Amino acid sequence: MPNVQSLRCKECGRDYPQEPIYVCDFCFGPLEVNYDYDAIAKNISRESIQDGPLTIWRYDELLPASRDNAVNIGAGMTPLLKADNLGKELGLNNLWIKNDAANPTHSFKDRVVSVASTKAVEFDFDTIACASTGNLAGATAAHGAKAGMNTMVFIPSDLERGKILGAAVFGSVVLVNGNYDDVNRLCSELGDDRRWAFVNINMRPYYSEGSKSIGYELAEQLGWRAPQHVVVPVASGSLFTKVYKGLQEFAQLGIIDSADTKMHIAQPFGCSPVAKAFVEGVAHPKPVVPDTIAKSLAIGSPADGMYSVGIANKTGGSGTIVPESEISEGMKLLAETEGIFTETAGGVVISTLRRLAREGVIGPDEETVALITGTGLKTLEAIEDVVSTKTIDPTVRSFDEIVMGTAVN
Amino acid sequence: MPLRRVRFTFRTDLIQRPVIYELGKEFEIVTNIRRADVGQDTSWVVLELEGSVEEIDRGLAWVTEQGVEVSALEGDILAG
Image (tube, rainbow over all chains, first blue to last red; front, top):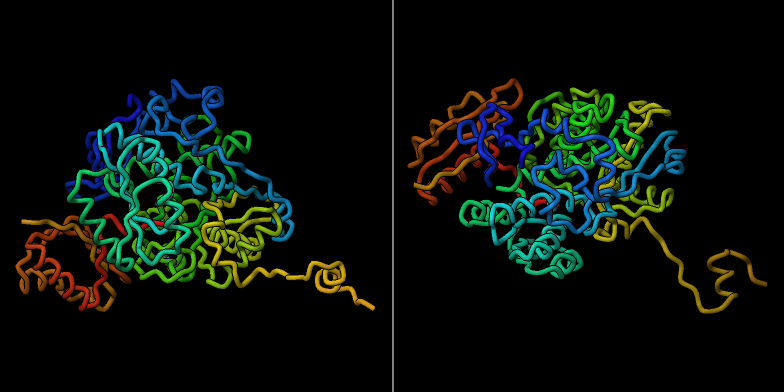
């Protein structure tokens, strides 16, 4: 790509050619795509973006691949909805929900995998792979199918049947008999051993760039400005750092005037290494063994945890640890007020938002975006205890008695 | 000889102990530190290990037993 100069080590700054590599040979720091922003500035404008497709590829000047060859099933340009009902409930008068459950496989992972699979084709891989307990599996399987690639999706064999079938419908899914650590270790070994495009290993520098599109969309959909606050669910921390990067790039290029957004980390109690590091004032999160119902946030050793803590500190953001019991409450609150059924990670975000509003970290009139990363239909078991239904006989009398609570004479 | 890149995270009470030296002495493993941060509360070291697969597995199991958190350089791969 003309706009990409190199892969650059985030730690020591060494440059590498654009290849399927992810770590600096010298210091083992992570590699990140390094762009020629002067060249981009000459080609990009609000108008050029608006003339583009209604997907993440409208921002391809700032992505590591061209829209012409994109593996595209329609990721991106998800709704940004004014959330007045939820806002009223929380005392926030300027609240928005970015609903990434509206992506093709119902989560934000379509953004990152669309970029990773496009690069995988460019690098002439014939197989695309990932290890996942949910959203990433579906996104990788779907994009692999669209690209006509062999797909290797590794899933722990004890995962809920619905999630397995939701990914398997697109093609090959491999169930691994083993726990979380076993699947991690196997995939780490396979990633070293096979010439596959592993989306979050050797494709990681490209894959993670896809998340920047959320930052771009927020700015565009708000009328070309950055919000004052964004609340982001954190797993590896990649999404968090890239939403921030997207907003900063737009400001740097003059697409928006400034990006002084405060970035807020949302994590569940059962897996909160990044939020805990922020709260304790420690730069580097300590690894944990995840034990949370928010499975999509269950990353005990977060690769971008340290960078996320740094950004939250730098922007005047925060880190919130949400009790497990509040996750389903958050899901229900969003559903009942805004008609959006989110996954458990979204429950973590809404409960974080509630705490930040209550504590005055977010002021009543400050423009705030809560990022909803996936649909609740994939995690139905999480809300079993907080929703109730009524069963009646097929008679008006039974309806009046049980549903309306009307005394019958 | 196989290589493995890992991150060790040390608790406060382990910071003064020469765990990496002991790893190289007790096992047939060559240790090569690439990046580190030693702080007051926690410390981490990113390093490369060279040795047979079995010896590295044994060595890492021993390090874990000592109370050091061992994680893959790329962090957890299994994502949601």
